[in-house]
Image 1 (cartoon, rainbow, N blue to C red):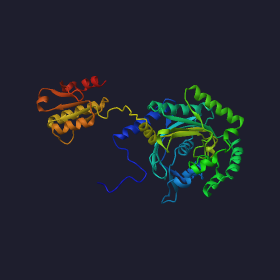
Image 2: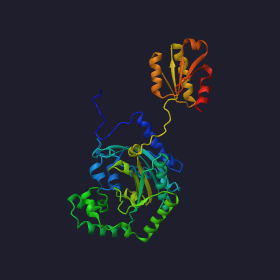
Image 3: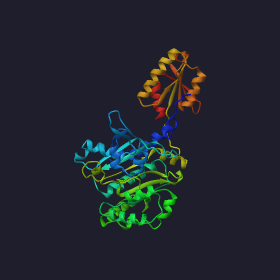
Image 4: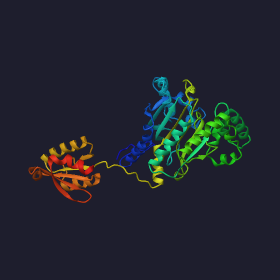
Length: 420
């Protein structure tokens, strides 16, 4: 047994469970690819300052959870704790916004890192699929992303999730609300850290999950009562477009999310079967983020959906995905000549798209057939010297047990026909 183990708060994805994770990633990405989103991949680490400016210096992500380090050359870097800031940085660096085709629509998939107290559904290394639409201020774009996420979850068979929706206002109306909220919070019995947070970014206190804090927030002013006419109209159009698409949502006036860059539309996908870690994904509009990280004004919107938590949501609803067999045909050679012939045929099968595997290591018939069963293959190809002398191999249906002799030169065509 190895002396090394996966670091605390992380996990290894291994077969057969890893197939489910791949299927979830594909299901989330499929609607994006069909809607004009191109794939982007960014480095696993970035400048610390990118996240300090973009995510927010007062956020728990930056102050407590970010894996930051200094390189031998003196660069201050951090493992990426989220995807939006990195994607926007990459888009700006590549001048994608100058192509004349706005919004720039991008999707990504990758690993992210936060130093958190490990528990089920909350890891220090986790996987997300995300989407960003950069450079356009349009309620239809906000609605599109919410609809696509809903479509992805439903394609997986999920039904017991809820969409929470709110508006955080903009630079015109949010400062007025911010001041009113701060006045309210100053009258509460809060610890020193929370009081400091209330002065820097009071909206984040609304997102505090501690019961001792939530109990005191009854009667707190709500942002919806402070929205300017422009933000009200924008939010109503988002709501109308989502409703017209048949997507059910709940208005949540206290929903703020944990990142500083959000403006106007904000939303969260929650699954009540996951306990305290109920959020499976979320996002919103971030019209000022580009300027925060040194770019031009580029109103944008996006989301990130957690692959890990989506898998947990599937388990909570007892959903088993219909995954394709990793192996459809398993070859069992008996003797050196059969080994040569069947290996060549397995290679041919793979070239035409049939998943095929081979009995390696010179096992006898009994051991090789056990491996064939374990592989989940629908058919086994078995051949010995006598079979090859007659120009045939034995094709065994692993479900029915029926065995048929077929010509060596007919193997590929016969299996293509049977497997569709």
